[in-house]
Image (cartoon, rainbow, N blue to C red; front, side):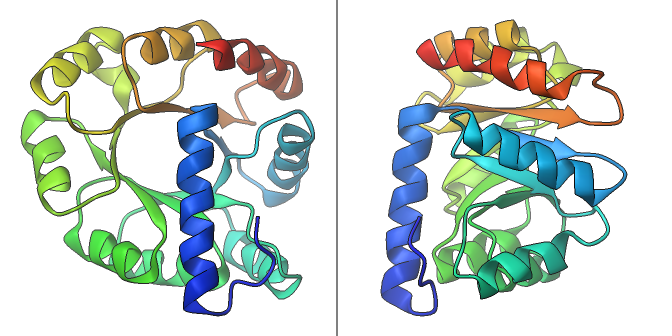
Length: 214
């Protein structure tokens, strides 16, 4: 990751690097929980074990301040998810988020991310929403929550309808399901790991390494 992100050229370079990493690694880990400290600890563990693409839940208290502290150190190596408004996107980007995932289609979020050259995955679930996000110029479309809509079956349906759109399967999934989405043609997968629900999150992260081969 570039350490200096204060000017336009470095923002462009960060955008290129994030895009290249997504296309190479194809797994973006999204971490959430009731408190920030264990999420930060797990994000560090994930990066130490080969995952360069890690996002934290923007709605966790203290997430914005943590991103700002990283930015002051010249670091921009975490993304955020669960953004729902243009204002939240602006705050996250100003705080130093490397990429953003939204919960739904919002043209304000798309425009802000495009203007600031920040990679974005726009939450969608229906064919209309998927095409709307694409038509508005979104970098990619996050099928969220994919598991609640028949999982792979629904994803395959959307993939057949929109083969030209970069679809990211987003939501709670196990490593086997993540691999199946990648085999089905997903641009990437974004498993959400909730530390309040997963008993052994570090072991789960290691299991996700096996999905990288697909």
